[in-house]
Length: 131
Image 1 (cartoon, one colour):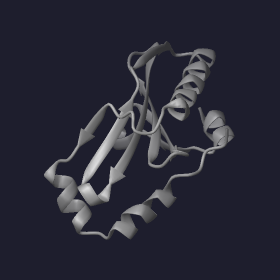
Image 2: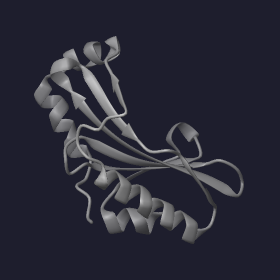
Image 3: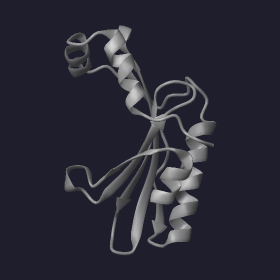
Image 4: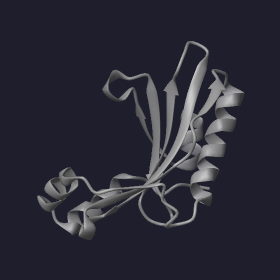
C-alpha cells in the first residue's frame, strides 16, 4: 500500500482511532478532496471505498460522491487492483454528480469560527496526485 501511495503522491493515514484501516487522501483535480478507504473486514478480506467531497463555505454544505464498497482478498495483487480501480474511478467522476449533500448545523458552527480563506487554505494539507 505504501508503494501505491508513493507512486501517486497520496497522503496515508493508518489506523485512525486505532481502527484497522488505511486512508489515502489527495486534492481532487476538479476541486475538493478525495479519499480511498481500506478497511480490514476479516482476517482474509478487505473493503475498499472511494470518496470525493467538496465543501461549500458560502452555503455551509458538503457535497459527497462515493463508490460502492468493494470486498477483496487480503493479497497484494487484489489490493493493488482495487486501489488502482478506486483511484481511476475517483478521477473519472464528473464534477457536480454528487450522491449526497449535507448541511448540518455543525458545519455552520465550525466553519463560521474560521474564515473562508482559512478553510480553503486547509486544502494545502492534501497533496496533488500523480497520475
